[in-house]
Length: 382
Image (cartoon, rainbow, N blue to C red):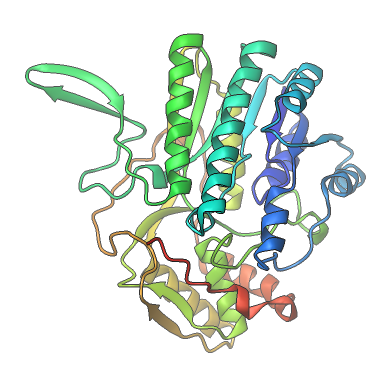
């Protein structure tokens, strides 16, 4: 298939491009390097430098013999989007192209405005481009489990059947985001659902939990093909961040009581979830929702796992509770369903001791690059 990856320079975008390319798909990526720019502006750059898209494409072609076409431009600009879609004519689109950080979205008015403009503008342009240039194409949109919040009931896989005053109907599961970033993800879902109903689009919306890890099947033995590895409060996901804190001798930053529970997955599972979704598309007029995670952990449980990982590897790791800068429940019920991707054939990679030890060993090789001032900024929701 011809697959276009929007946000193809990102932590997940580039590994997805290699993964799909390695399996025989014709892949193109698009990005405007927004994440790189914001990381520089906030002085929270990744643990190690990452080649640009042109360099990455050359490295991948030399290693695997597959070409990945790359477009550099702003997906909020219609002329750029139209030119790319009309030239490549994708059969599937993977939409990662959003400002991906909840803390960044809560930083100040400028960051909030950028998040709104970028995330909703790119989603709208993607929808309009599919309608105009490839109406049968399948949009695979990366959502987030954070759209659901932490309701005091079981979280179903996207949809909820309701009986009210003797009548029944089916609705999108109620959303209650915990940040502006997550709110834009809810609005993405609403936009897609609207155009599925009126234009007959086919869409898979993946409610993904936080991702961790560096190694994939495609970059084994070649660290030049690694994705970004952020470890800061703004762009770093919690497991990656805790591993770097352990290596740096920086106490693991647990917010409040540490009972915040979420669904997590290895980066290799993200790639397989995307591939399985593409290779098993929904029908026209269908918005299909999968909850994309493999295990649930509280922040306290993650901190203990990283503490034990450090101990196994001769590091003294401390855990420190900090006043929670976010507006969230620190203890709550959490039981989300996640059967759809397993039924498509997902074989999970769980967070074993070996997985954490390998990640720690990799970070240890780059320990001199760690900027301790980037780890915690205390960005307050209020």
